[in-house]
Image (cartoon, rainbow over all chains, first blue to last red; front, top):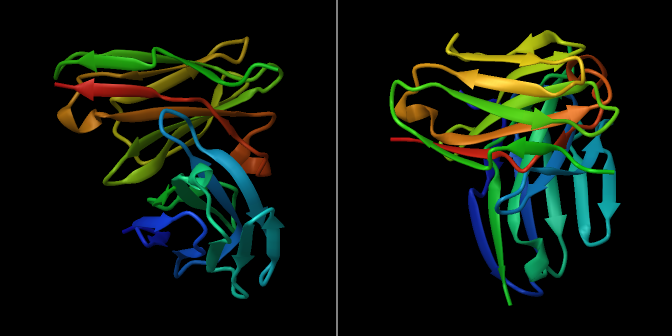
Amino acid sequence: TQLLEQSPQFLSIQEGENLTVYCNSSSVFSSLQWYRQEPGEGPVLLVTVVTGGEVKKLKRLTFQFGDARKDSSLHITAAQPGDTGLYLCAGARISNYKLTFGKGTLLTVNP
Amino acid sequence: KAGVTQTPRYLIKTRGQQVTLSCSPISGHRSVSWYQQTPGQGLQFLFEYFSETQRNKGNFPGRFSGRQFSNSRSEMNVSTLELGDSALYLCASSLRPVSNTGDEQFFGPGTRLTVL
């Protein structure tokens, strides 16, 4: 059973479009992280959200942590080809910081 | 500052063989975690080492083992390889144990293992 469900699994869009990817769970997390992984590389941390309802912005990327700390979303405005990659969410349990990763959303932004 | 390095980057083995993967953490980082990444299961935690001691372990069979040296470099060993062990093996380093502190982890590029 996958603890963290990410959707969609694949997303292919044109440059300039907006998109949202989701990370959902029935479990409560103390914090949630988003990573981007490019081909041939390891994941790189984008953001960590820790408070229910928290919204963080990183240039054209907006991250939101659900009020109940069970879900999160990543919104990208005016996507660019450089945004192409695998976006992973990872949740840390309440009892410890052991991370559980979702399977990821593979985003392709076409020029 | 150099990032996390992993060697080798690519490896091809046959069923039944064993393999050893190496990870050098960022200078000053004392914690190393290992993950297996496959298309079907995603990124799954294998184990974490800090100060040469295993601090946390995932749900993998005993064929998967690891160790850490006094200079914080870590190795991971898989014995009696199976086809299902084909995966990208990632290591990540952090200053302190992630499982206790939530410190940021920095990932290496991974070792792509193919089992034939």
